[in-house]
Amino acid sequence: MTEKTPTSRRNFLKGSLAAGGALAAAPALAAGDPLITEVQPWANQLGAGVDVAPYGMPSKYEAHVRRRDVPWLTADPVSSVNFTPLHELDGVITPNGLCFERHHGGTADIDPAKYRLMINGLVEKEMVFTLQDLKRFPRENRAYFLECAANSGMEWRGAQLNGCQFTHGMIHNVIYTGVSLKTILEQAGVKTNGKWILPEGADASAMTRSIPIEKALDDCLVAFAMNGEALRPEQGYPVRLVVPGWEGNMWVKWLRRIEVGDMPWHHREETSKYTDLMENGKARRFTWEMDAKSVITNPSPQAPITHGKGQTIITGVAWSGRGTIKEVHVTTDGGRNWRQARIDGPSWNKSMHRFYYEFDWDGSPLLLQSRAVDSTGYVQPTKNELRAVRGENSIYHNNGIQTWYVNEKGEAENVEIS
Image (cartoon, rainbow, N blue to C red):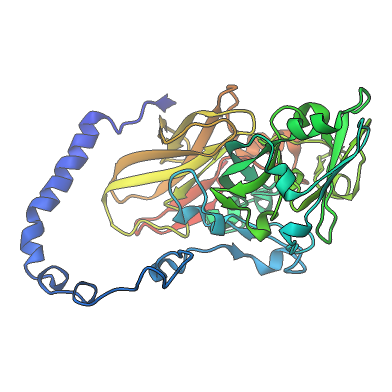
């Protein structure tokens, strides 16, 4: 059963009144609080000058907010992955320094003056562009999520990793600046039998993926900036491909070449990896779009409830590779009762959405879940619903509903009840 959020005006007022009561008692507490009654060091001495940190950094008190890896997940830290700390973030934009990394051959170190992008294959005119050439085309700014196909991949056979950073952190949401791929391909002139493109990375792994021409001419970007600054090296500096709504491995980083062909290439990364092995031993191929998905980021195992009973904020993120997020539902009792969460902030196409659900926690154990509904009407499935169709062999495209158990102390852990 789904109800409109009980964070109704009446409940909100109830919470506000409770908060007001606390505020009314505050002066008595403040009288004995040296942080209020005594002058603190930061108030009686000068701080750092304007040029001490010419490229700004977060406060030293936020040093724990960082990407983290799971060493045993991969055989080598060069061809590996780390994870976005979703539980430490709010809003919808991921800071550049916290965007998860996935490399197949380490981060390429490319001098922008020596950067070249080649267009070849079934085109009227093979072309080579410098970075400055690309920046002379009309630019576009768009916000998109990028999710690795293996995000939540360890959870197919049950709860494994204790924290949303590790279960769902192979995703980030960034505003990209770049040039429409359609504009660039039009310069070269795609021949009538050009049906596919093969973007190739300049890194040591020479990452390639086959992409149908319809997608290439629809909404793909050749991007050189993220959140207003040049791409970070680990995100493909100086140029990467942006493939909105599709799995992250297709967003080829350090983009050096785009070949136009008449059929898919079936290279290594689209045969040995990034296919979905089904229960009967056959594999799905070309499962590009990322289905609607959501996760509660707070509270979660790395972000327990520390304030005790009372007004409590549940928040999380939701996204869909097929459009926007229409609704997010939240349950505190393992799916017996669902209530509609409040989506706040921009609702951009194929971009991350932020949701909140405020309630009065009575201190009893919780089974927290969220369920996204996208603009096509698709409803995020339970894990059992997903397994009934896909089996348990795959590590890719797991968008099943996540459960956190919260005990009386507010401590949370990864569990499965579906």
